[in-house]
Amino acid sequence: MTLSSHPRARFVFAFFLLAVSLIGCGTEVYNHPVAATKELFEYINKLNENLGQPWVQSGVEIRMPKQMTEIPPPAFERNEDGQLVQVGDDLRQPNYMSEELPGLIGAWQGMVEADVASEFKQVPAYAYIMTNGIYWAKNEPEAAMEFSNKLAETVVNGLNLPPYDPTDWVQKQYPPSPGLVPQQSASVWVTKTDYFVGETKAEISLHLFGVGDTTVYVLFVYPETISSGERFIERIDLALETIKITDDKQQTGAAPGAAPSTPASGF
Image (cartoon, rainbow, N blue to C red; front, side, top):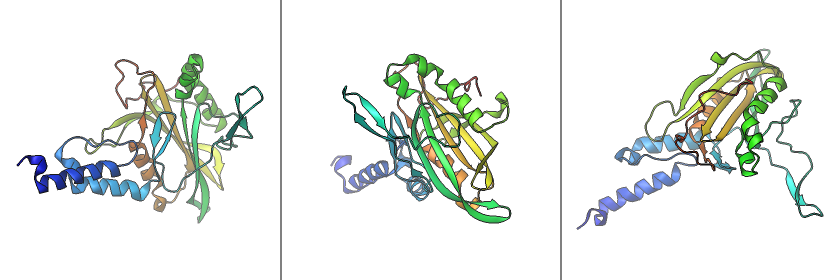
């Protein structure tokens, strides 16, 4: 009798396949025995309890915190020349910024509890994903290479952020330790702003991922006095553990999940 034909072996193999299918978008189980253990299913349950459904767009996959609901993208229709043109405004763009976010491919909004003058109230939180991948796809290399500087200018000016200090960026790993899924590196900047969400000032966290020539920024804007009961910061970290980026240019020697060593010069 072969190992694969043994009833117990077939059960373990089926268990492993189920685990892989349940892990969700943006994560890959390592090929070792621990993948079919209680630890894996505890991790899967943690993701499912804290995150929404997988979202995929323009080479980026992620699961957002459960509080967040995707803002629909604008509709498109063909004009008389047969070209696709946008119908109406892009409601994903933040109306509190003076300029539009470049490379925007997804936006989310949700209501979270925050301390407002010693009283807990529901105030909005936002999330955005931007990538230069859409410019590479449209064969616009100049726009792709200028993407980070343009985004820096938009975020800093649009949110009245303090002067940039290179030491503000820190390197983080998602997840923080190796184990069930591959780690991915990111450059992270967290800062307070003068912009108000609801009735309280906002804090932002900006996360920079890179694969080859493809750069992806994930921006969260939320009240600085957000209730710990929301578990929002923890859920941001969990969301970023599920991110997966495809580099269409397939730059030789680029390590999957490796963050660019230096953020945009404009930050």
